[in-house]
Length: 333
Image (cartoon, rainbow, N blue to C red; front, side):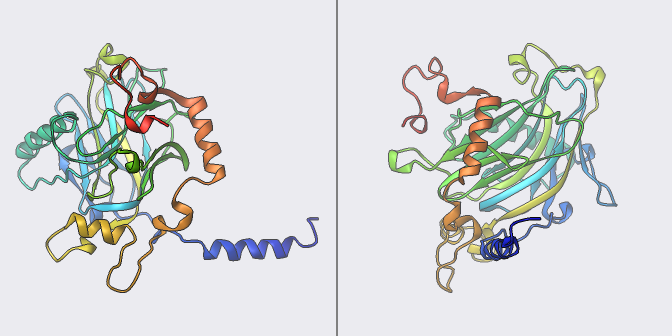
């Protein structure tokens, strides 16, 4: 038997939870209503009964999908089951980016456009000003673990890679991966556990992605020039096709178009509206802007410490040889 006042405490706890700011929706979104293929739609298969979305990579093409809308602040998540067996050379990506890309032309046109987008994506110092938050799953030979590489691009500059091992086999079942961002910080979460936090240090001169709305993307593609053991292990096409499955898409984020005039998306208006500004009816406070969302809870900080201690295998902030001229500002202090 529990303590005599356990019912009272439970009631207080339930009341407390009921008063906490929650995401606007906890129901997974419909793929076809919220996303569409942007690259090689013939390599993307959907199920009429609501089953997983399957992305296929073979020796002719990879493929990718993009959200129909852009968002600024909130959380986006998906469950992914990665390529089984020998996945060396392959990359499965889930990311948000202000490089918003659609292709309504034929497959050949879209494939060429997608190739240009992919090339642009890795020109991190090309002078563009896009923002992007990446999760990239780097394949490996059979029996060797996947690595999850994350990166943060702000105003076109990336070079903020971290790599983590995972505490489970990501090929045997679906696991949840999420990106959360608000005015204060960015979180990358795996099965609800924060593995990376990028704080807003604009006061110290470090740029932060808080102005540009971003689309949501997923893709699978060949990157055997760098993805596995620095490019030493190439993709074995005799093991193709390589199939990654996505399901349970969830978007609890601020739709940028809601802040703009019909037919236009104004980044400044989106930043004000989505960042807790006045939407015409007084102060608007979304769940991601609530007081408790300015940082991690004590429990989340312990989870992050555990993830870094046990599973962080590369951190650009520890790579003094790479940044011999001085560490990036966010790595200081």
